[in-house]
Image 1: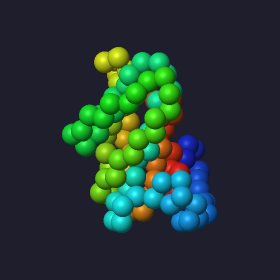
Image 2: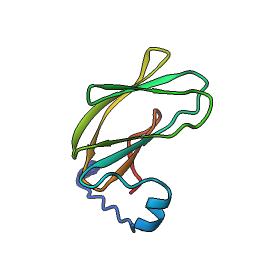
Image 3: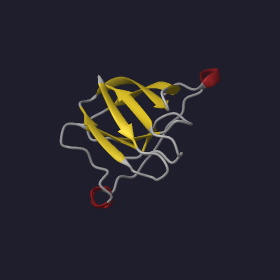
Image 4: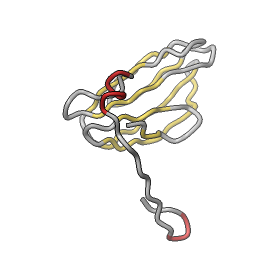
Length: 108
């Protein structure tokens, strides 16, 4: 991945399939998984891949969505107002976390 000033950033990760399966992080075979939750008091919605997914407010209600590999644009809305728009590129077997306050992060 390219970084500012022509630098290169390398990310290393160790995968533990048993722990990931126990934590319900693994996607369906051939797919990638998005994991998202919401801790603010207002109800939110995630709009991705022509789907709108409601996210309960006030508690952490993690939800998952398995998608085919690819690049997806998404929007996070709170009380109807857009609070984040971004893209995420998914590869088969990966799991990513989505949040309103930072870039998507790979968790598996």
